[in-house]
Amino acid sequence: MGTVNGGGRIIDQDALYYPYMHIRDVEWLKRNLLLFPHVARIAPPTAAGSIRDAPEIRPFVESMGGRDRPLLRVPHIFDHEKASDSLVYPLVGALDAELTANGDAVRTRFGKAAAEEAMRTNPATARLYLCKAPYLLQFLERNGLAWRLRYEQDPDLDVVGLHPRLGEAIMMILAISAAKSDGLEVVTDNIHIHRTLAERDLNGAVRHWIGDGGRDEVAPPRVGRKLALAVFEHITTGELTVDNLAALSKNWEARGEFLAKLREVADGIPEMTDEGELRTYVNDRVSDILKEWRRNKGGAGSFMRRLFPEVGESFADTAKNVIEKLADPAAGGLTGLVAGGSLLSAAAGFAVGVVTQAIKAGAATILDRRTSPYRYLSLVERAGLGYSIAH
Image 1 (cartoon, one colour):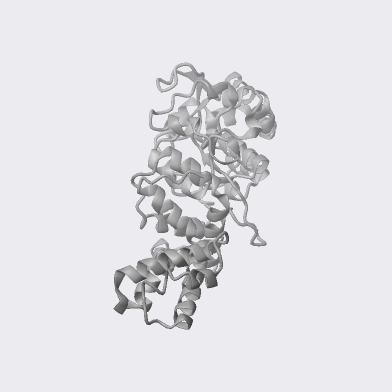
Image 2 (cartoon, rainbow, N blue to C red; image 1 turned 135 degrees about the vertical axis):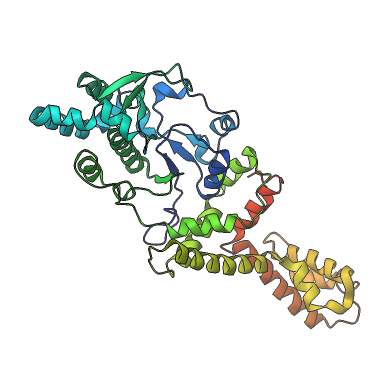
Protein backbone atom coordinates (compact mmCIF):
# COMPACT_ATOMS: atom_id res chain seq x y z
CA MET A 1 0.00 0.00 0.00
CA GLY A 2 2.96 2.31 0.46
CA THR A 3 1.60 3.92 3.64
CA VAL A 4 4.19 2.18 5.83
CA ASN A 5 7.88 2.14 5.02
CA GLY A 6 10.24 -0.76 5.51
CA GLY A 7 10.88 0.22 9.12
CA GLY A 8 7.22 0.30 10.04
CA ARG A 9 7.00 4.13 10.23
CA ILE A 10 3.64 5.55 9.17
CA ILE A 11 3.84 7.66 6.01
CA ASP A 12 1.27 10.23 4.90
CA GLN A 13 1.34 9.14 1.24
CA ASP A 14 -0.84 10.08 -1.73
CA ALA A 15 -1.75 7.97 -4.76
CA LEU A 16 -1.01 8.60 -8.44
CA TYR A 17 -3.73 7.53 -10.90
CA TYR A 18 -2.39 5.75 -13.99
CA PRO A 19 -2.63 6.05 -16.97
CA TYR A 20 -5.58 8.40 -17.54
CA MET A 21 -6.18 12.08 -16.85
CA HIS A 22 -9.95 11.67 -16.43
CA ILE A 23 -11.30 9.70 -13.47
CA ARG A 24 -13.86 7.39 -15.03
CA ASP A 25 -15.53 5.94 -11.93
CA VAL A 26 -16.45 8.06 -8.89
CA GLU A 27 -16.80 4.94 -6.70
CA TRP A 28 -13.25 3.91 -7.60
CA LEU A 29 -12.10 7.39 -6.56
CA LYS A 30 -13.99 7.17 -3.24
CA ARG A 31 -12.53 3.75 -2.42
CA ASN A 32 -8.99 5.01 -3.03
CA LEU A 33 -9.60 8.15 -0.97
CA LEU A 34 -10.31 5.80 1.94
CA LEU A 35 -6.77 4.45 1.51
CA PHE A 36 -4.92 7.63 0.54
CA PRO A 37 -5.30 11.29 1.65
CA HIS A 38 -5.36 12.46 -1.99
CA VAL A 39 -5.31 11.04 -5.52
CA ALA A 40 -3.00 12.79 -8.02
CA ARG A 41 -3.30 12.53 -11.79
CA ILE A 42 -0.94 13.27 -14.68
CA ALA A 43 -2.38 16.60 -15.84
CA PRO A 44 0.11 19.41 -16.57
CA PRO A 45 -0.95 22.95 -15.56
CA THR A 46 -1.67 23.94 -19.17
CA ALA A 47 -4.47 21.36 -19.15
CA ALA A 48 -5.75 21.73 -15.58
CA GLY A 49 -8.21 24.54 -16.34
CA SER A 50 -9.49 22.85 -19.49
CA ILE A 51 -10.18 19.33 -18.20
CA ARG A 52 -13.85 18.52 -18.56
CA ASP A 53 -14.41 16.35 -15.52
CA ALA A 54 -17.75 14.63 -15.08
CA PRO A 55 -20.11 16.51 -12.72
CA GLU A 56 -19.69 13.87 -10.00
CA ILE A 57 -15.87 14.20 -10.17
CA ARG A 58 -15.57 17.99 -10.10
CA PRO A 59 -16.29 18.38 -6.33
CA PHE A 60 -13.18 16.31 -5.56
CA VAL A 61 -11.06 18.89 -7.40
CA GLU A 62 -12.65 21.71 -5.41
CA SER A 63 -12.60 20.10 -1.92
CA MET A 64 -9.50 20.47 0.24
CA GLY A 65 -8.18 17.52 2.20
CA GLY A 66 -5.10 17.19 4.38
CA ARG A 67 -2.13 19.51 3.88
CA ASP A 68 -4.60 21.97 2.35
CA ARG A 69 -4.55 20.18 -1.01
CA PRO A 70 -7.46 19.16 -3.25
CA LEU A 71 -8.63 15.56 -2.87
CA LEU A 72 -7.99 15.15 -6.62
CA ARG A 73 -4.80 17.02 -7.45
CA VAL A 74 -1.86 17.37 -9.84
CA PRO A 75 1.67 16.29 -8.82
CA HIS A 76 4.00 19.18 -8.01
CA ILE A 77 6.47 17.99 -10.62
CA PHE A 78 4.09 19.33 -13.29
CA ASP A 79 3.80 22.79 -11.72
CA HIS A 80 5.59 24.45 -14.64
CA GLU A 81 4.92 23.96 -18.34
CA LYS A 82 8.33 22.59 -19.38
CA ALA A 83 8.52 19.97 -16.63
CA SER A 84 7.02 17.06 -18.57
CA ASP A 85 9.34 17.67 -21.54
CA SER A 86 12.44 17.33 -19.37
CA LEU A 87 11.13 14.05 -17.95
CA VAL A 88 10.84 12.34 -21.35
CA TYR A 89 14.24 13.36 -22.74
CA PRO A 90 15.56 9.78 -22.25
CA LEU A 91 12.82 8.46 -24.52
CA VAL A 92 13.50 11.18 -27.13
CA GLY A 93 17.17 10.25 -27.16
CA ALA A 94 16.47 6.53 -27.50
CA LEU A 95 13.96 7.05 -30.31
CA ASP A 96 16.23 9.49 -32.12
CA ALA A 97 19.03 6.92 -32.07
CA GLU A 98 16.66 4.23 -33.36
CA LEU A 99 15.42 6.50 -36.17
CA THR A 100 18.95 7.45 -37.20
CA ALA A 101 20.04 3.80 -37.33
CA ASN A 102 16.94 2.29 -38.92
CA GLY A 103 14.22 4.87 -39.56
CA ASP A 104 12.11 2.84 -41.98
CA ALA A 105 11.88 -0.14 -39.64
CA VAL A 106 10.91 2.11 -36.71
CA ARG A 107 8.17 3.80 -38.75
CA THR A 108 6.89 0.41 -39.90
CA ARG A 109 6.80 -0.82 -36.32
CA PHE A 110 5.29 2.29 -34.69
CA GLY A 111 3.63 4.16 -37.59
CA LYS A 112 -0.05 4.83 -38.17
CA ALA A 113 -0.91 1.49 -39.81
CA ALA A 114 0.74 -0.47 -36.98
CA ALA A 115 -0.91 1.81 -34.43
CA GLU A 116 -4.41 1.23 -35.82
CA GLU A 117 -3.85 -2.53 -35.61
CA ALA A 118 -2.51 -2.32 -32.03
CA MET A 119 -5.41 -0.11 -30.93
CA ARG A 120 -7.78 -3.03 -31.27
CA THR A 121 -6.26 -4.66 -28.20
CA ASN A 122 -4.82 -1.68 -26.30
CA PRO A 123 -6.70 1.58 -26.99
CA ALA A 124 -5.94 3.19 -23.61
CA THR A 125 -2.66 4.88 -24.60
CA ALA A 126 -3.31 5.31 -28.35
CA ARG A 127 -3.99 9.03 -27.87
CA LEU A 128 -2.31 11.59 -25.65
CA TYR A 129 -2.86 15.24 -24.86
CA LEU A 130 -0.14 17.31 -26.50
CA CYS A 131 0.30 19.32 -23.28
CA LYS A 132 1.51 16.20 -21.43
CA ALA A 133 4.83 16.17 -23.34
CA PRO A 134 4.73 18.74 -26.17
CA TYR A 135 8.40 18.51 -27.18
CA LEU A 136 8.32 14.72 -27.45
CA LEU A 137 4.96 14.53 -29.21
CA GLN A 138 6.00 17.18 -31.74
CA PHE A 139 9.20 15.20 -32.30
CA LEU A 140 7.11 12.09 -32.98
CA GLU A 141 4.80 14.08 -35.27
CA ARG A 142 7.74 15.31 -37.37
CA ASN A 143 8.92 11.72 -37.77
CA GLY A 144 5.57 10.26 -38.79
CA LEU A 145 5.02 8.56 -35.42
CA ALA A 146 2.17 10.79 -34.16
CA TRP A 147 -0.74 12.65 -35.77
CA ARG A 148 -3.35 15.17 -34.66
CA LEU A 149 -6.79 14.00 -33.56
CA ARG A 150 -10.00 15.75 -32.60
CA TYR A 151 -11.24 14.44 -29.26
CA GLU A 152 -14.82 15.43 -28.50
CA GLN A 153 -14.45 14.89 -24.75
CA ASP A 154 -11.95 17.79 -24.55
CA PRO A 155 -12.20 19.84 -27.77
CA ASP A 156 -10.18 22.69 -26.23
CA LEU A 157 -7.08 20.52 -25.85
CA ASP A 158 -4.76 19.32 -28.64
CA VAL A 159 -4.72 15.52 -28.85
CA VAL A 160 -2.38 13.30 -30.87
CA GLY A 161 -2.72 9.70 -31.92
CA LEU A 162 0.24 7.34 -31.69
CA HIS A 163 1.15 3.69 -31.30
CA PRO A 164 -0.10 2.39 -27.91
CA ARG A 165 3.36 1.10 -27.08
CA LEU A 166 4.87 4.58 -27.45
CA GLY A 167 1.92 6.06 -25.58
CA GLU A 168 2.46 3.68 -22.70
CA ALA A 169 6.19 4.42 -22.63
CA ILE A 170 5.47 8.16 -22.35
CA MET A 171 2.82 7.74 -19.65
CA MET A 172 4.98 5.30 -17.70
CA ILE A 173 7.96 7.66 -17.73
CA LEU A 174 5.78 10.57 -16.58
CA ALA A 175 4.21 8.38 -13.86
CA ILE A 176 7.56 7.07 -12.58
CA SER A 177 9.00 10.58 -12.47
CA ALA A 178 5.95 11.99 -10.66
CA ALA A 179 5.90 9.08 -8.19
CA LYS A 180 9.58 9.60 -7.37
CA SER A 181 9.26 13.38 -7.10
CA ASP A 182 6.16 13.51 -4.87
CA GLY A 183 6.58 10.16 -3.06
CA LEU A 184 3.40 8.72 -4.60
CA GLU A 185 2.12 5.17 -4.92
CA VAL A 186 0.85 4.33 -8.40
CA VAL A 187 -2.69 2.96 -8.55
CA THR A 188 -4.79 1.96 -11.54
CA ASP A 189 -8.25 0.74 -12.39
CA ASN A 190 -6.64 -1.76 -14.77
CA ILE A 191 -6.01 -5.27 -13.50
CA HIS A 192 -2.22 -5.11 -13.58
CA ILE A 193 0.59 -2.62 -13.11
CA HIS A 194 3.72 -3.27 -15.16
CA ARG A 195 6.80 -4.29 -13.19
CA THR A 196 8.90 -1.30 -14.34
CA LEU A 197 6.19 1.06 -13.10
CA ALA A 198 5.77 -0.67 -9.74
CA GLU A 199 9.56 -0.63 -9.24
CA ARG A 200 9.90 2.96 -10.59
CA ASP A 201 12.51 1.70 -13.06
CA LEU A 202 12.85 4.62 -15.50
CA ASN A 203 15.58 3.12 -17.68
CA GLY A 204 13.79 -0.21 -17.71
CA ALA A 205 10.61 1.47 -18.95
CA VAL A 206 12.44 3.09 -21.88
CA ARG A 207 14.21 -0.15 -22.85
CA HIS A 208 11.08 -2.25 -22.52
CA TRP A 209 8.63 -0.17 -24.49
CA ILE A 210 10.77 0.65 -27.51
CA GLY A 211 12.76 -2.60 -27.37
CA ASP A 212 11.53 -6.11 -27.94
CA GLY A 213 10.37 -6.76 -24.37
CA GLY A 214 7.14 -8.64 -23.83
CA ARG A 215 4.04 -7.28 -22.13
CA ASP A 216 3.82 -9.93 -19.42
CA GLU A 217 6.14 -8.38 -16.82
CA VAL A 218 3.38 -7.51 -14.36
CA ALA A 219 4.07 -6.61 -10.76
CA PRO A 220 2.90 -9.04 -8.06
CA PRO A 221 -0.36 -8.01 -6.38
CA ARG A 222 -0.19 -5.63 -3.40
CA VAL A 223 -1.74 -7.89 -0.80
CA GLY A 224 -2.13 -5.11 1.76
CA ARG A 225 -4.19 -3.05 -0.65
CA LYS A 226 -6.33 -6.06 -1.54
CA LEU A 227 -6.97 -6.60 2.17
CA ALA A 228 -7.98 -2.99 2.71
CA LEU A 229 -10.40 -2.88 -0.23
CA ALA A 230 -11.88 -6.23 0.85
CA VAL A 231 -12.42 -4.88 4.39
CA PHE A 232 -14.18 -1.76 3.07
CA GLU A 233 -16.57 -3.97 1.10
CA HIS A 234 -18.03 -5.06 4.46
CA ILE A 235 -18.56 -1.52 5.76
CA THR A 236 -21.47 0.71 4.77
CA THR A 237 -20.07 3.49 2.59
CA GLY A 238 -23.10 4.36 0.47
CA GLU A 239 -23.52 7.82 2.02
CA LEU A 240 -19.89 8.89 1.75
CA THR A 241 -19.76 12.60 0.90
CA VAL A 242 -16.93 14.72 -0.43
CA ASP A 243 -16.90 16.64 2.88
CA ASN A 244 -16.49 13.46 4.91
CA LEU A 245 -13.77 12.17 2.59
CA ALA A 246 -11.98 15.51 3.06
CA ALA A 247 -12.25 15.02 6.85
CA LEU A 248 -10.93 11.46 6.56
CA SER A 249 -8.05 12.81 4.47
CA LYS A 250 -6.92 14.76 7.54
CA ASN A 251 -7.08 11.67 9.81
CA TRP A 252 -3.83 10.39 8.36
CA GLU A 253 -2.57 9.01 11.67
CA ALA A 254 -5.62 6.76 12.24
CA ARG A 255 -5.54 5.65 8.61
CA GLY A 256 -1.80 5.02 8.80
CA GLU A 257 -2.16 2.85 11.89
CA PHE A 258 -4.90 0.85 10.17
CA LEU A 259 -2.81 0.34 7.02
CA ALA A 260 0.25 -0.52 9.10
CA LYS A 261 -1.77 -3.25 10.79
CA LEU A 262 -2.92 -4.54 7.41
CA ARG A 263 0.68 -4.64 6.19
CA GLU A 264 1.53 -6.72 9.24
CA VAL A 265 -1.35 -9.10 8.44
CA ALA A 266 -0.40 -9.20 4.75
CA ASP A 267 3.18 -10.15 5.60
CA GLY A 268 1.79 -13.42 7.00
CA ILE A 269 0.36 -14.41 3.61
CA PRO A 270 2.84 -16.32 1.41
CA GLU A 271 3.64 -15.05 -2.08
CA MET A 272 1.54 -16.79 -4.74
CA THR A 273 0.43 -16.32 -8.32
CA ASP A 274 -2.92 -18.15 -8.07
CA GLU A 275 -5.53 -15.39 -7.71
CA GLY A 276 -8.18 -17.82 -6.42
CA GLU A 277 -5.95 -19.13 -3.65
CA LEU A 278 -4.88 -15.59 -2.74
CA ARG A 279 -8.54 -14.58 -2.51
CA THR A 280 -9.13 -17.43 -0.04
CA TYR A 281 -6.30 -16.19 2.19
CA VAL A 282 -7.48 -12.58 1.93
CA ASN A 283 -11.10 -13.45 2.79
CA ASP A 284 -9.95 -15.45 5.81
CA ARG A 285 -7.83 -12.56 7.13
CA VAL A 286 -10.62 -10.05 6.45
CA SER A 287 -12.98 -12.14 8.58
CA ASP A 288 -10.50 -12.02 11.49
CA ILE A 289 -10.00 -8.25 11.08
CA LEU A 290 -13.73 -7.54 11.10
CA LYS A 291 -14.25 -9.72 14.21
CA GLU A 292 -11.55 -7.84 16.11
CA TRP A 293 -12.87 -4.44 14.98
CA ARG A 294 -16.46 -5.26 16.00
CA ARG A 295 -15.24 -6.55 19.35
CA ASN A 296 -13.26 -3.35 19.97
CA LYS A 297 -15.98 -0.96 18.87
CA GLY A 298 -18.57 -2.49 21.24
CA GLY A 299 -17.51 0.04 23.89
CA ALA A 300 -18.43 0.46 27.52
CA GLY A 301 -22.18 -0.07 27.22
CA SER A 302 -21.90 -3.59 25.85
CA PHE A 303 -19.09 -4.32 28.32
CA MET A 304 -21.23 -3.39 31.34
CA ARG A 305 -24.31 -5.22 30.06
CA ARG A 306 -22.22 -8.38 29.74
CA LEU A 307 -20.68 -7.86 33.17
CA PHE A 308 -23.93 -7.07 35.06
CA PRO A 309 -26.83 -8.51 33.00
CA GLU A 310 -29.09 -8.81 36.07
CA VAL A 311 -29.17 -5.09 36.95
CA GLY A 312 -30.89 -3.93 33.77
CA GLU A 313 -30.39 -1.16 31.28
CA SER A 314 -30.42 1.82 33.66
CA PHE A 315 -27.35 0.76 35.60
CA ALA A 316 -25.49 -0.33 32.48
CA ASP A 317 -26.21 3.01 30.81
CA THR A 318 -25.17 4.96 33.91
CA ALA A 319 -21.98 2.94 34.19
CA LYS A 320 -21.32 3.45 30.49
CA ASN A 321 -21.49 7.23 30.90
CA VAL A 322 -19.20 7.18 33.93
CA ILE A 323 -16.70 4.89 32.21
CA GLU A 324 -16.55 7.07 29.14
CA LYS A 325 -15.87 10.10 31.36
CA LEU A 326 -13.21 8.13 33.18
CA ALA A 327 -11.57 7.14 29.90
CA ASP A 328 -11.37 10.81 28.94
CA PRO A 329 -8.04 12.22 30.18
CA ALA A 330 -9.85 15.50 31.03
CA ALA A 331 -12.29 13.71 33.40
CA GLY A 332 -12.05 13.73 37.23
CA GLY A 333 -10.78 10.84 39.31
CA LEU A 334 -12.57 7.56 39.92
CA THR A 335 -12.85 8.18 43.68
CA GLY A 336 -14.89 11.33 43.22
CA LEU A 337 -17.29 9.63 40.80
CA VAL A 338 -17.98 6.77 43.19
CA ALA A 339 -18.07 8.92 46.34
CA GLY A 340 -20.46 11.32 44.66
CA GLY A 341 -23.05 8.57 44.57
CA SER A 342 -23.78 8.53 40.82
CA LEU A 343 -23.03 4.83 40.61
CA LEU A 344 -24.16 3.68 44.05
CA SER A 345 -27.57 5.25 43.62
CA ALA A 346 -28.07 3.31 40.42
CA ALA A 347 -27.04 -0.04 41.89
CA ALA A 348 -27.46 -0.14 45.63
CA GLY A 349 -25.95 -3.25 47.19
CA PHE A 350 -22.98 -3.58 44.85
CA ALA A 351 -19.70 -3.51 46.71
CA VAL A 352 -17.70 -0.40 45.90
CA GLY A 353 -14.66 -2.55 45.22
CA VAL A 354 -16.49 -4.62 42.59
CA VAL A 355 -17.90 -1.54 40.91
CA THR A 356 -14.53 0.17 41.02
CA GLN A 357 -12.80 -2.78 39.33
CA ALA A 358 -15.59 -2.98 36.76
CA ILE A 359 -15.20 0.70 35.93
CA LYS A 360 -11.46 0.34 35.62
CA ALA A 361 -11.91 -2.60 33.25
CA GLY A 362 -14.52 -0.69 31.27
CA ALA A 363 -12.25 2.35 31.02
CA ALA A 364 -9.52 0.09 29.68
CA THR A 365 -11.98 -1.17 27.08
CA ILE A 366 -12.71 2.40 25.94
CA LEU A 367 -9.02 3.25 25.83
CA ASP A 368 -8.34 0.10 23.80
CA ARG A 369 -11.01 1.16 21.34
CA ARG A 370 -9.54 4.65 21.02
CA THR A 371 -6.03 3.31 20.44
CA SER A 372 -7.03 0.30 18.32
CA PRO A 373 -5.41 0.12 14.87
CA TYR A 374 -8.95 -0.45 13.59
CA ARG A 375 -10.40 2.83 14.91
CA TYR A 376 -10.13 4.19 11.35
CA LEU A 377 -12.80 1.66 10.31
CA SER A 378 -15.20 3.23 12.81
CA LEU A 379 -14.54 6.65 11.26
CA VAL A 380 -15.15 5.21 7.80
CA GLU A 381 -18.35 3.53 8.96
CA ARG A 382 -19.63 6.76 10.50
CA ALA A 383 -18.80 8.70 7.34
CA GLY A 384 -20.37 6.00 5.16
CA LEU A 385 -23.63 6.27 7.08
CA GLY A 386 -23.77 10.00 6.32
CA TYR A 387 -22.76 11.35 9.76
CA SER A 388 -20.42 14.33 9.90
CA ILE A 389 -16.86 13.60 10.99
CA ALA A 390 -15.55 17.14 10.70
CA HIS A 391 -11.89 17.13 11.73
